[in-house]
Structure formats: C-alpha cells, structure tokens
Image 1 (cartoon, rainbow, N blue to C red):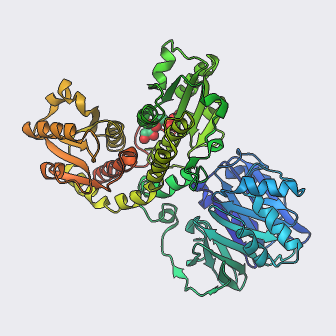
Image 2: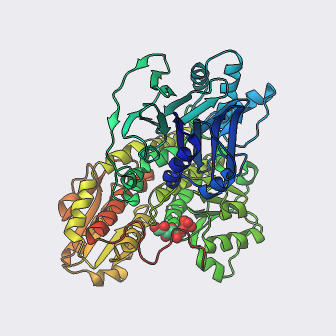
Image 3: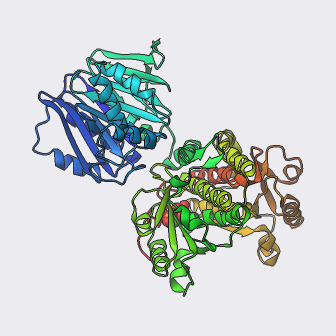
Length: 609
Ligand code: F6R
C-alpha cells in the first residue's frame, strides 16, 4: 500500500507529482521521493517521514523537467529510511514500486554474485538493476521493463524512467493497481485515481499482466506476451474525497472490503506452497530458539488483544505449547514472571501502544524472547523486540481496526502452524491442509462480503437498540468480544461480548424481549452447546441474531435473523465470522449518524497510559 504518481507532458512535473502524492498520502507516509528527467540526467530527491519533508527538501532546487515519477511509501521490506525510499535507482534508471516481490532474495543473491551493489534493503531495488542491465544490452525501456517482469514472482504496480529515453514512462501492473490518466497533450499515471483527478477524468485502467508506454501523445498498452491492447478510457466523476475512499462512504467500510487483499499480502512470500511449508525466515523468529520454548505469552490491548485470544487457542491446538494472553496494561501493574524460555508475542497494529511497549520492555528485561506482530514497519514495539512479523495490511485510516485485526489473525495462525511443524506436532499432511485452509481465506472473505446486505438488514432492524450482547465459544469467543467492541466504539451503543458458556453465570439476567443477542456459531465442535444457549435466550424472549455457516439448517431456523458465512474449516472460521460483525457495527453506526472513521474520544495510536 504505497502511492505512485507519474507525469509526461509540457508542464513542470515536480509540483504536479507532489500534489498527486499529497492526495495519496493516506496510502502510506513513512517516506517519499521524486525522480525527474533533467537536461543533465535524472534528478532524484527522497526524504523520510511525511510529504512535508519532501517539499522542504525540494525548496530552493529548480527542478524544471517535464517528465517524472513520485512515490509515497508504507514500508514492507526495509525500514523507513532515505536509502529505502523510492524512487530506487540503478545507473540512469529510476523505479517506483508498489507490491511485494516474493523472489527478491534469490534475485538479489544472483545479482550480487555478479557484482551488483545494492544500496537499499528493499525488495524493489531489484527492479532498477534488472531494467538497467537490460538497457545496457541495448533494449528499449519498454523491452527492458518487459524482460524484467519475466523474472518476477509477486505483485507490482511500477513506473520506470530511464535517462536514455527521457520522453517516456513505462508502467506495469500485477495485482497492485495502476491507472493511466489521459490529458490534453499530457499523460499521467498513478496507483490510485485521486492522484490524477486534478488533471483529467479520462482514465485507462491497466489490467494484470499488462504494461504501457506513456508519452505526451498518450499510452500504448501491451500484454506481457506482446499483444497490443486497445481499451477505451473511462470517465471518472468522483470527487477527490470520494476517490480517496475508492467510492466507499467511509474509510472503515473501504478497509472492511480490503480484507481479502490485505490477507493475501500477509500470506505473500510466507508459504512454500509446493512443499506445504512456512518460510520460517519470514516470521522474524530465530529457528534455534523454537526448540527451547516453554510457553507462549501474548501481550496486547483492545482489538489486538482479541486477536491474541485466537492466537492462544491456535498455539495450544497446533503447537501443543502452554499459552496465555494478557492485557498489556495489566501486565505492567503486576509482577509478571517471564523466563528466557518464554516466547512473548506482542501484537499491536500501530506498534506504538504505550502499555504494550512497556510490557515488552519488562519481558525483555527478564530475558524473554519477544516477537512483535505489527502493521507499521520499524515502529517502537518491533524495534524494542527481538524479531518482527509484519502484517502488511497497508495503512488503516478508520480508527476502528478491521483489516489490521484479520491480518493479525493470519499472522498468528501462521506462527502457530510454523511452531507446530517445527516442533513435530503437525506432520506434512496436516500442515498442508492447514495452509490450504488459510490460502482459501481471501476468496471466502470475498464471498462473505457479498452478503453485506444481511448485516445491513440487522443494523436497520436494531440501530436504535441501546444494548446488545455478543456470545461465542472457542474461536467464536474472541469474535464475540470483537463484535461487541466494534459496535460500542463506533455506534456508542452498549455492547458486551461473553464466552457463551458464561451466559448463565450472569448475563442471562439481562435477557428480555428487547435484548438483541448476537451468537457466533458457525459449524464447529461447539455447535450443539452453543445451540443450547440460543434456546435459553429464546426461552427468555431474547432476540437471536446468529452468525452461521452457509449450510446451517438448525440455528438459522431458531434465530430471528441470520448472518451467513461460507462453510470453512474451523481453524479459519474467525477470519470469516468477524466480517458480518464488522459490517453490522459499521451500518449500525452509519444509520445512527455517528462519526464512523473518527469516533469520539478514541485515537488510532494510543501513546498515553
Ligand atoms: C479498536 C482498536 C483498539 C486497538 C488498541 C490497540 O478498533 O483499534 O482497541 O486495537 O488501541 O492498538 P494497537 O493494536 O495499535 O496496539
């Protein structure tokens, strides 16, 4: 999730690129840069931090070139730093890249063996070197980019400049978006529509496996196989604000719908499909340590804490290790006992939550090995830890966490499978089936999202309710907690999540004919027991809304309303059952008219105790 913009035309490119990047800052903002064709070669300016730093770096420089590319970065491979900022350069070639090159380690080793010196830790730099080498052999820029793409596995949206063909930009796409803007005597490109809207509304959308050469005369598009593509541009009438949200009303809704893509990015490069193995090196965990682990101890707050409850269940089930999860703010107050044989897993989307950070420091002081699971690369918690496993969900703008939660779940499940395999609990075939289930999640999530109208109907029916109860068992329990938290934080309705087995120990007293009770109960080993809870709620005139599997025949007839999720193995059900609850919270809040993306009193990064 980074932002790309490019310009070829008669006007000075730098201000156009900078303005485009400003419109894309929501996609990433840890570093930024520009490359401009100047009379004496490429001019490249990069800086760490927000775009204002790049603006300042440009002050006093007269960059008058009319062809250029720009990038705003959200780090995945390599920390935010000037050398890791894009454009990445090799000779007279400059490249900006969104996406993840999965085979970058192998490609890098090969080039290094041939004497190429890398200046960054990014996976993207490989592109600049490969294009440069092809140009040196006499290829045109277009052919050089095409040849380079043939070496790559992974995802990309790229824009490339070369000093020797200064009148053009070559762009290409595979899974990461790339849009071409057709203006009068000028052509633009961007990873997203907002970057281009100030200049043209005629947009040509590149498809996967296509590349294009952009000049002042327009765009020539070809497939990687060399077939010419002729596609009519589309007129886009969105306002810039609508475009930032890809047409969704709120960032939160956009982020809910981004989850299949986010999960794909968390998994990318981490699974060796043919071998049915997890790429251990990608998990930030020292392999020598794994065999000595006595206990896994999770630390987190809020939504991230809910993810760790599922993490705990997975570790116990798949790795057969003792596991516990603790609210980080509580751990700080106690005298927790950590040992050097503890694997402490600190989960935090922002990587900055002060309570989690303090608990991490306590664990490290006691000699525990700390692994951070975070979304923000090189943030405080990963820096304070021994290793980091990044979720790669891209920036999350809505204060209520959605895609960061599901990608945390994926990271935790990967960790549990990896530990289980390394420790000999899982054999090759059970590892392969767990990985298969995980890899099917993005497409199952897409199917879940297609049922958003069911969540809307429940929200429409209940958005004036003042209380709501959420129940679940096993892996449904953290999802009940998360459903309740999502609802309360954005709609301000009072909601409580409970382990279904605890219902008779207190919350049952709340149930009457005005109490909506959401029961998370896809087909799993606890189904019959949870069904008994449904009967108990009904017997007290409570109103049951059941989250059930698509093929459900029983609970769906007892419940007043149902939210269906695709049938899936139990292991991955939480990744699906949370989706209707996120949507329910969203529609509920939107119908009430609250500020969904910035609910009152809440902050995205909690840096106070
Ligand atoms: C709720 C939410 C919060 C965070 C919590 C921890 O939607 O986002 O509950 O989960 O503040 O934040 P991180 O994960 O950044 O440590």
